[in-house]
Image (cartoon, one colour):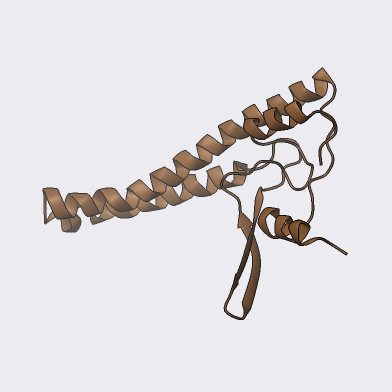
Length: 154
């Protein structure tokens, strides 16, 4: 029977464990670091695309409210084209937001319990630590922590 602590860990960190990854050899650690570097680049691109989409909404509203009240009417076509461009950039960056090793999208787990209801769901994880499919590290801090502990990790 599972302990209450283990059930709590499953609820917080997701249903199921990461696949085991060997980080004993130097070559395996170098491969993990290369994977982390590539994922950081992809994560930054995704974040920039998302920031561009948000700014496409905020900038015209700010122009309309603080600078020129007639701006919205005179530049409506510009606003529409900026909106579609930002959506396209966000979608392209979203397609590239994957684990560099296996190509899986980082999935997060949502678990909540409130008055009489328990909810479980999943979705895109904005700050993943490891890939749930292949077990490769996606965050340098987690790799450093596990290197201090030593051995196989999963």
